[in-house]
Amino acid sequence: MSKLAHYLQEHVTGEVTTAEDVLNHFATDGSILTLKPSVVVYPHNEGDVRKTMRFTWQLAERGRIIPITPRGSGTNTTGSALGSGIVMVFPAHMNKIVEIDGKTGMVKVEPGINYGRVEQTLNTHEQFLPPFPSSGEFSTIGGAVADNLSGERTIKYGTTLDYVKALRVVLANGEVIETGRLNKRDLNKKLGLTTFEGEIYRAIDTLLEENRKVVLASRLKVSSNSAGYNLFDVKNKEGFDLTPLFVGAQGTLGIITEVTLDTIAYNPDTTLLVGMFSDIKQLQQAIIEFKSIDDLPSKMEMIDRGLLEISDRINPNHLNGVIQPPYPEAVLIVEFDDHGERQQKKAAKRGLRILEKYSTGCKVTTDPSEKASLWKLRRAVSTAIIHSENSMKALPILEGAVVPVHKYAEFVEGTKSIIKNNKLVAPLWGHAGDGDLYVRPYLDVSQVGNRQTIFRVMDEYYSLALSLKGSTSSSGSDGRLKAPYLNRMYGNEVYDLFKKAKHILDPYNILNPGVKIGVTIDHIKPLLRNEYKTHWHDHLPQG
Image (cartoon, rainbow, N blue to C red; front, top):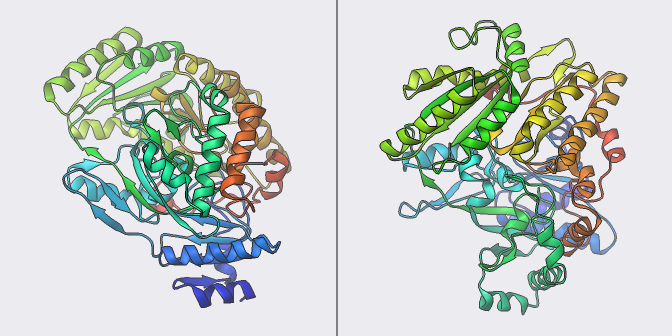
């Protein structure tokens, strides 16, 4: 064990290890990248996080930088859970529900708790956390907050940020702060503090005041965006709140040790509509009309014909009785979950009229078994992305870029052209109501030609999204894989503000460096794996 590990083990309650198999395990996450840590720490409590941060801060003051990367279940597909220094793993100990308020629905949890466990517990209280991501059954709340994750219900209910009410955060120097909405009087108290927290409040407040027009003008006109740092929502008429700055920051500004979340009433009784489309432009028009309904659908998922064909080839029985070839160009699955039965029927009836207007065929049901059968269309994604042929795997490299909904057809068609021009096979699907799209091309990371193709199609896909006034990061944040596109997306002025915000909160660049700021494609190319494997086949990833 190294001197660093010995020192940490002496001072923290949790475990510290440099065992080779442990380091190798945490050298990968859900991405195509690999980066081996030097030490793994399993913090037992917030005190362990503080001691570790304080120690690395003191080393940094003397010129020795040891990076710290917080990690949940490592499901992130952009490489943000990887680090070369200390990887701090939270699910082992900091995995508890601290408090549930039965009256308000508020829940307070530690970052390492499994998202699915929280959701199940909330359901027993007739509440739920709407942004539940596709990885929810095997990811953590801390990871969801760090990535500002969203999922199938984002069209109606928003992203994780919309439900985070407060955070406990360990700063780069080991201080602990609690974030939340501050009025003018409370903000003035923070500005007057002589601590590092006070320095941060003063510097961020000045940054926002001096660059107000630049910050406001840079907000992208898309349904959800987790790219960069959220400076936009820190200060407004409602007050001042650092919470949006930490949500989606992927552990690059501070380490979250407790999350307070708002929840809403849960209704398992839903109405499901499915439409078949022969033309993606017709599908786009249907989406636009669905979004004009007063009672928005809770879900709106698109499945591409190619994905259905891949699923049929791999597992011909999966879609038996649900849909038969020849498959339509695209399938749209729409769900309504309004609590009033009459209200839900009214919304579904209007939705059915939209499908009858634009689709070539449609179905509607409230029957649980029929709904489960129709949802197999969306679950076909699992069949496609866990499949491998020889060394060819469905790689998570074109993930969750988003465009304005009125440009969705152009985005889908452009992406298909990229796949075709590069002679690839790739399943496509997306949260169509939000205008985002997922693509996982089958490639072999061990082959030189395929490795070159990876970065070429990444650039073409994300460049297409940006050309359509979209974002590279809709349902999750940037990580190492998407960080190179931040400057191009926002421009030099806003990117410079991101750099300043990072320096204000992390002046020595200790916290998860290489994940947000100052990252180029050349930085990540050497991190590309020689073999792609994931750790979650027992949970059947759904993309």
